[in-house]
Length: 435
Image (cartoon, rainbow, N blue to C red; front, top):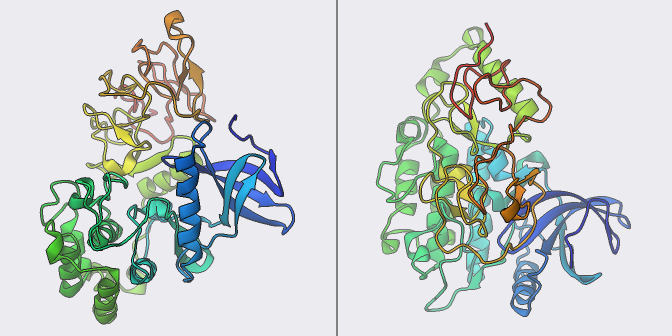
């Protein structure tokens, strides 16, 4: 079975663009030609339609169907269509992960936090462990309405829960990574999401307190909410909230005094509002035009300029890039440079490093491939934009990658650059600013 194509029909649904990709499924934007509305369709990867996969999908449908809550994404339709097992959901505007890339007011963050906690608390009251809480699984709808999706790896809580460490790296509780998840694991994951939303930083292992970004948290949040976050992020699961029900109860009790705001903001008068400087305006224009084309997901740890995972240097300040977990596009990370990798690659295409135990065969194709390897022995395998080495044969890529919609090239490496925005080439680090 081949992958579905844009404008292909599956029953009453007309397939649109791909929205997201998970471990065993792809989510597409589609159009319900009967109801006349856009929807989101979840379909398994080609070649992975097995008995176990279908049972996972059926379990997600059964779990979600029993969770009638305004902050949990409902299932509109589920079943086999033209040989595909399809689940249809209401289509949101974006994920919480996308929303975290833009500024939010304190009131908005408190509202989103309460909605997240309410959704997970409802599932916990049904004794359901989600097991994969992350910003990408919270869907934003108009009016700031948030809904939790993807109960695909959720497990009904029993006296003793055993699993294989399922979940998403970066948001896993320590005990869940060891294969012993519980409702307290969801509490830990929620704590990581809330801390990232309030501080702009995602805490990393070994989760020592205070994490990066704590100064902002201390200034903007009431001391009781800071203590609340610390309890959620305790390494010893016995010291955390027992479940999200107790967590949301504690949050609502301190909600009226949760947000303090920065002292500068409290003192600022209407006549003294700070106007955006030229660098801020430049960054906004860059993100508006190139965020999608360059897959910009993170910020430079030094200058806070927007960067993508494929960049070797910060194009704003020229700093050598250290990739954060939040920027990774794939399930596996290179042990050498920490950039994301697909499971079937044999080598890291960004730093030349080898991969430990790669999959023997590719699991699925990817629309992001944009070129082919020139090595005859490699049989013309596909390459993604801005790869430095072939991930299958390790040959250095000779192609000078360009940026879609731009014509300028770096004078040193000949790869595409944006001299109207950048000070440095993100691929080789040389200066490219216009004089």
